[in-house]
Image 1: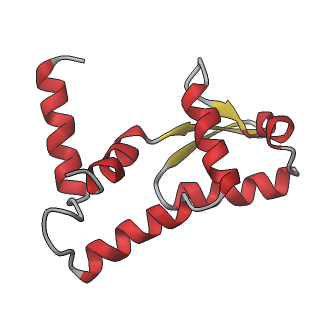
Image 2 (image 1 turned 90 degrees about the horizontal axis):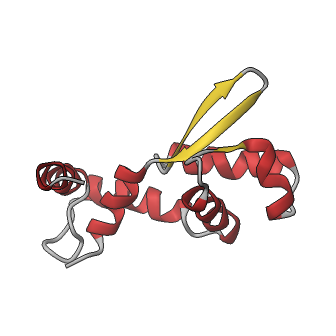
Length: 116
């Protein structure tokens, strides 16, 4: 990553999610951050993020979560919907299946929101 790309990403992160430690949040900022952090409060969803983060291809088919998570496909779809609504993952439908990947910018924004 070049220095200019890094600077752009930091600026985008700062605009998206202000640090909760830098100044008091207004109600809208608190609600937005709360929604995303709430999506992270489930062990299955954290495991989904971990699987996506460590995928060599950078994406995982919804069908490939069943075995590692030991959950039914409808349960996995429920968790992926929550993560998607929070902006943490995005799906790409290809025929019958949906391939998911992380929204790394959104995750960086959440990380910045709790960083000093």
